[in-house]
Length: 131
Image (tube, rainbow, N blue to C red; front, side, top):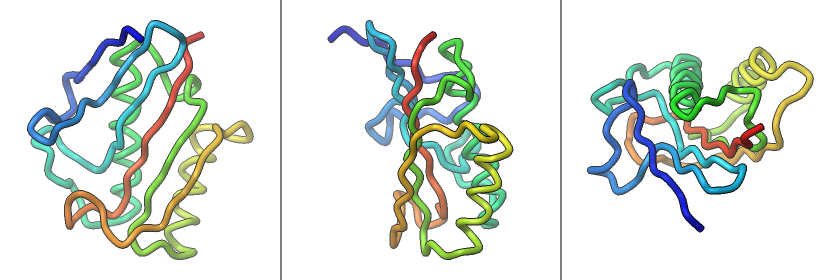
C-alpha cells in the first residue's frame, strides 16, 4: 500500500530513533507514532505526570495538523502509563474528556514498567481517519 511519511516541524527529529511521527496511507487512515512529553530536542520536558500528558497531547495535535487533521479525526488511541495507578488514570480520563467530551475514540490503556526513555511517564499513539 502506498504511503507517505511526515515528520512535522515543531516535533523532534525521530529518525535517529528509527521511527517516523506520521504515516499516511492512500486510503483514509493516518497512523501517529507514540507521542510523549518531548520538546523540539526530543528530551522530556517535565517530570510531572499531568504535564507529560498535556505535552504529549499537544504533540499529538501537532502531528495531526501536519496532515490537515485534528483531534476530531482520531478514531483510536493507545496510551501507556508507567506505574499506572488511580491518580494517573484520573488525570488521563480528565484529559480525554476535555478534548473529546462524551465522544471519545476507541482506546486501550496499558500500564507499563518503563518506556523508551527513563524520564518518560506517559505515551499516546493514535489512528485517525480522513473525512
